[in-house]
Length: 466
Image (cartoon, rainbow, N blue to C red; front, top):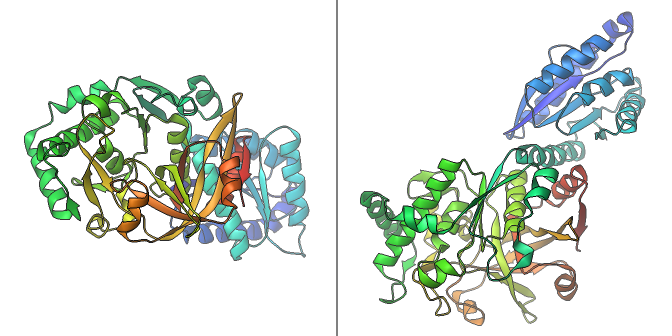
């Protein structure tokens, strides 16, 4: 839930304020009622309308102490602008000022004056003029609140970097100093062999229950008697439990695991853990998805975490693999880091998993285990990634649509990997040229505006490829 505080401001003259107070309260109630319909907002409403310098400070401090994710300043009249400035200056989260459409009162002028005062002093504040009940106005407010939630929620989070840079991918390396300064995210380094060590201690009954659940729910489990056996699947389950234990013990908010090449070459691939960490369920029941980035791609993990916080949905991790000119689709795939939820996007895990197959890992990997194979269900997607050049971050985003194909199409790329076949709005060759990474991330739905707003709030360039 997005925790939103609503502050109302009024005229500084007591007699004028008393006449305006009923209307100011009515506008605050309208904001609260509209946001309640979203189903993703918790409202904190100040119990006093700010109408002098003292209440500007006391209300501002009280709201800040409540630790909201964002603050809405209700400016339906020509409130004294310094009141909004004082209250906003005491906040540590993004602020938005809103005024309704009402020509009988100077709310629009009040909005302009309040936000100008705030911005003039170097503080951030968005503004919206419009009736909260109108669809366009409500959409703007919700886009801001989702972006603000991502900005606020990231502060104080801890990223678990399990392993290090994978197979020479420099663009996946983490800069802990930049992260803490720009995003408020700390980095905890953990050796990936800690997963293998802890896996040996997972209770046998947990492994047996997981095996039974997978056998019942999966579309198929394609043991080959070599790379992929019941024993290697059991070890992958143990690795998943070990990873969950590390997350819980170290209080990690999201993670990246190297895997390649020590674990994939000499032990067991971590595809099962990557899929189910990112899922909203596993064999133990419903759960909060924990972003898990394959190949310890740290900026990829951060991208996924931002997408998850903005959308409330699992985020995907995959690679550019191929562009099919005949069908007009990109084949985006990865050895197994895609949440199984995208196989059907259903609240019932069984509906998703019956379309998912566990397949032997490809011969290129010297270890053992399975890949988690499926084709993502058709639907609109927001796709993109954070990249950086000379230390400066940029968020590149574009729209796409998953298209459905039969399993035969997997033979054109890697038949045992999970795939998303994506039709993009942009020119495919322009996309290849302008997109600065081999990894790509996505979330179901259209969240371009929210990502753009997130970038504004963090002073990051946002490039939308159309």
